[in-house]
Amino acid sequence: MEQLFQYFRKFNPLTGNAENAITEISNIVTVKKNNDLQSFGQTCKTIYFINKGVARIYYLKDGIDITENFFFENNIIARVESLLTGRPSRKGIQVLEDAEIVSINAPALFGLYDRFHEIERLFRKIFEAAYVDTVNRVEGMQFHSAEERYKSLLHEAPGVIKRVPLKYVASYLGITQVSLSRIRGHR
Amino acid sequence: MEQLFQYFRKFNPLTGNAENAITEISNIVTVKKNNDLQSFGQTCKTIYFINKGVARIYYLKDGIDITENFFFENNIIARVESLLTGRPSRKGIQVLEDAEIVSINAPALFGLYDRFHEIERLFRKIFEAAYVDTVNRVEGMQFHSAEERYKSLLHEAPGVIKRVPLKYVASYLGITQVSLSRIRGHR
DNA sequence: CTAATCTGTTAACATAAGATAAATAATCAC
DNA sequence: GTGATTATTTATCTTATGTTAACAGATTAG
Image 1 (tube, rainbow over the protein chains, first blue to last red):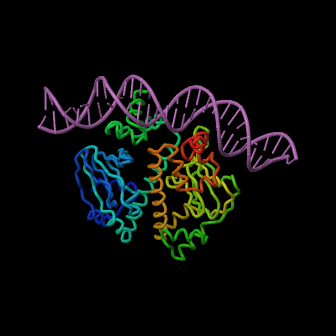
Image 2 (cartoon, rainbow over the protein chains, first blue to last red):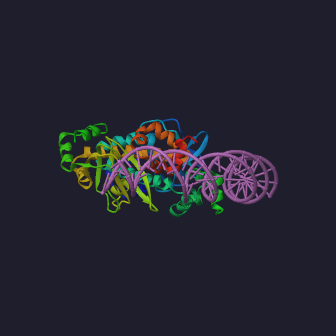
């Protein structure tokens, strides 16, 4: 849990009491490569934090597997469109390398917001930062060619290309695997 | 201000004291069609709420005007990538119809978070909802043709097509004005 | 009212990306 | 290791979208 609390400190340091309260509603799971941490269907009730490994959020559009996002060590994963709305999620979380993951019971966490204002503030800041990332991603998608998007991914998150199968990267970029291969072959 | 507080009530009702505190750091401005409410360059320090009118957030990419988003009555506008990070904004806010807008001093608002937990909670919920909208927008952009994006905009926000010049709609959809025209001429 | 500008449409052509199929290359199960 | 499976690249053809330009209708300024 220490790794998680260290991550929290970058946003909003917690008192020992608050940390303990979070520890009580969390547990650590290990997941083998290519297994699903969560599959779609039900309402998402968990927030994850990756101690070690890589994961992706994905969904099926007309039967085609599309990666919404990748997540590496020391990051939170949450299917917010379900978690924050209470609606069932159409998305799954798959682990792409053997992983160690902290899973936090989200309803219990939200329940702590009243007792621990500091926890509400912490997650406010975490989600605000994720929101900003997503706004920036929309901007990146709006008027860049596939090649530009690939190059900026290479630059901003080289780990993705190194650690993730290209077929997942392609749909993340909004193109087919074949197009990505063509771009990589540089023209 | 009553219109704003009614909007707030959908997220988290405030006590009279909290409403008064917000009133004190806000004022109402009127802006004429096509004028900028805010231009780019400085760090964004204001959150807006539209009582009446339409506005858009836009930016220049290689000298080309791109619309990031449209905002109608009874909605909050904020350039979050600046507001929540403290970095200067490269985006402007332009009014597309004569508008009446509430402007809230953001640093003062954030200052109220300590005195009024309920205000922090309110804006946490507002930004969470905006975050979810943005995640859904990424999904919509990821694997839809321009025509599909246009049709779903028609369906989900018909006001955009009715009240906004098409040149702005085109860049919002991530296509050129000519392509949009072609799509509208249905093939 | 007239000229000038802005906005939207259409056409012709160029280019990027999708679909499909097939050939390699890499990984996994045994 | 060997064969089977999965991932990636390459090739061909097709389609969607970008680019540029011309034009028509609206809107605005004087």
